[in-house]
Length: 427
Image (cartoon, rainbow, N blue to C red; front, side, top):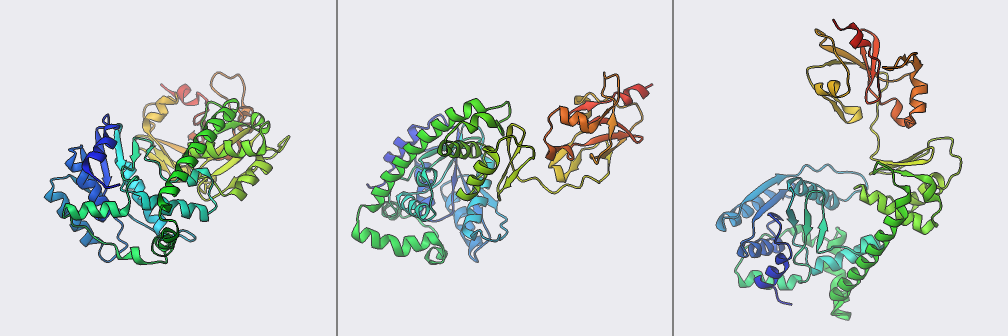
């Protein structure tokens, strides 16, 4: 199929309600052709170039992008990625995550991130996912459109091959940059592209189209599995997206429980753990009866805990020193890094804590044991331990709740109880 402006006009006519298109523009062949066509269609487009600073020629590539956009009067935004090498994670993957994070930050309502993935990319991705043992979610590979938090991700070139794109670029006499790392077979994708695909295509000339059909079928399967997961999760839902009731989950078969948990984790924008870890979550946490402890299963991107009859999904908790004492100038924001939380002056008013005139500082501590307080409206003092237990506050949260003190007197368990003590001293 040859690539033409009219064919992409048909594609974008399905998305004519969008107000803005952010094109991921590397300066390479594929994104140059995509940007050229979208400009010709007169779409409200802005090019975004992410400089990863990983190659010696990165600044020259950026200059090429600036020249191309200047020649065609296309708005261009330059983003700079900061990439730190991590054990057991490829530099290619780190760069991709950094790039997508920067692109998604730009999205607003009724906007789209547009990337130049094509049929060859799709075939390579399916093969990579097969070799990684992926299920339908991985093998569905690259949909033409995908909902993001503040917009959508579009891939308008998926029906076209690299040859189609090259023919268009030559016909239009376009200039682009070539990344020499594309010839480095140390990267898995490059090895597939440069060594494996030519052999497959020699034996099966239509392999790319066949793999694309397989991806469509896997996408259909994935859609059905997601619908089933929605039905299975419905009885377990609570008023919090990251909290489920355990008992309804225990009635599911092992396979449907696996499917439901995968969908729940993905829906909360956390990467699903390995098959081995997911099995441990099912057998050691979800299916256990009469749970007395609070078991935990963690992986790089997330963790799942259980307390009584509820399952909790979260990002891994940061290390927190419950013995620390913090002085808070209450006319200024206070960042508590170990909680990932910022206390604002208005939080005191919102929490119903009355501060007497002249008081400019409070002390923040965390539960260590033995604290007692008389909640506002209560007739007697109670131990904080019993109050937290009755309120069914999960154990891992109890030492992370800010306790507000004034003159060594506990006046508030923030987000839970106030004592009214400060109010009583007000003149």
